[in-house]
Length: 316
Image (cartoon, rainbow, N blue to C red; front, side):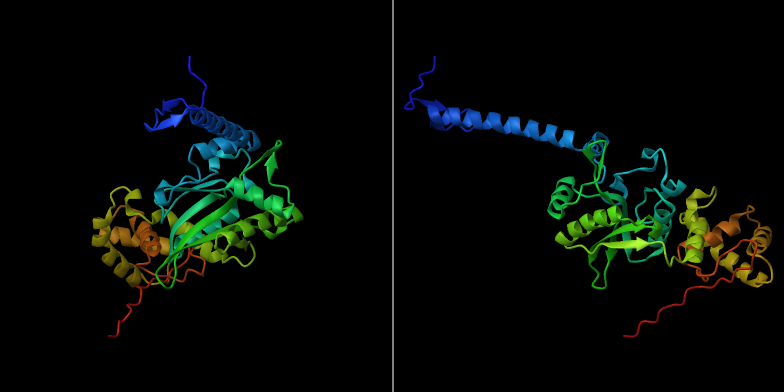
């Protein structure tokens, strides 16, 4: 039986120090309390957060970058799509599938895919719930919730861009059609705004007004052709072999006929599988090796004027 006098010395199994009995008891109680509060903290967090969202956080959603990023919300999570749109789009920058939940998110994604300064796109980006809960309490705003439990607030996009000083910057963006604005929406916007302001990031809301519709539809038309290997029989080497003769033949055919007919004539003349020249038009435009007026709607049933990018002359 252990003598409870404070003068008794006991060896601490964790660090080999000789300590008094009172110190030993104090340390044991402290360790037990730490374990208790850790378990209690997890239980409180799990009970206060909507269980589905808690499980997503545990599964690593909202973490990573580039192809390793896992969107917090994925297209298959929603039984009812916002605006009737759920899309899974292969990413140009990220080399993974992007999940967008509305037409406006999808269109914004396409524009950012085309933008050269953008090097990474993370959609459905979650904000730390303990921070948004704190900000909501400070603003006296009800935190977003479902079935009596708080839910994770997420931004539609977190963009990584290269600025004029060649430095990486983070650009949080929320996409919202104007007809969906309400007092409650503005309250949630304020939580987002304050969170990013505290973290030194410039957050913006992107509305549906003033969208370059022709530009967006043109990117959508050619988007899948970014990589050549999605078409059987094509790879980067074949592209290099056929790009010049296809371009020259299309230019020779002129713009008196539709681009679809011109491409079929080109396929027959060069001896390519039907559809190859049309795919090459999309591929070369997607990679900006050929250029066209992207603000004019491209229709396969109409002529299309193609050109080569102008070379930039460097003056020493």
